[in-house]
Length: 168
View 1 (spheres, one colour):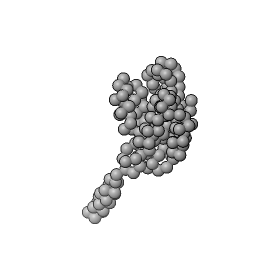
View 2 (cartoon, one colour):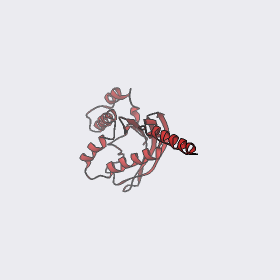
View 3 (cartoon, rainbow, N blue to C red):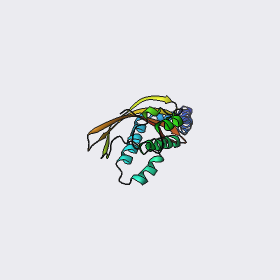
View 4 (tube, one colour):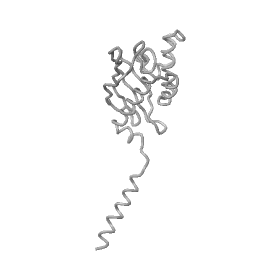
C-alpha cells in the first residue's frame, strides 16, 4: 500500500521540477493580455506625463535602439534637419518609412492633451519573438483618434517596441 502512495508523490515532485524552466520569448508572448497591458501602460505613462524630457529618456528604455534612432531622425524631418529623401534612403531597408508618422513618439496632433487607449488588440505574431498590436489612441481634449500598428519584441529578457506604423 505504501508503494502506491510513494509513486504518485515522486512523479508529482519530478514533474514540478521540470516546470521551473525560465520562460522563453514564445511563452511570454503567448500571454497577449499581459503584453497588451504592458503596451497600454507604456503609451499612457509616456503621453500623459508632465516631465517630457525625463519621460522620453524612460520611454527609450522600452524601445529598441534602432526604432529610437529611426523615430528620432524622423522627427528631424519636421525641423528640416534631414530631408525626407535622406531619411527614406537611410531607413528603407529596416522600416516601412511611409508609416513613420509625423511629430513625436505616439503623437499625431499639435498640442495633444490627455491620451487614452480605447483599443489595443493583438493582430498576429510575426515570429516567435515578435507580435503586432493594433492600437487606437484618443486625444481627450481634441476628440481625435490615431490608429497605429505597434510591433512588440521580446529581446534580452524584456519586452520592447521595435516599430510603430501610423495610418493617419
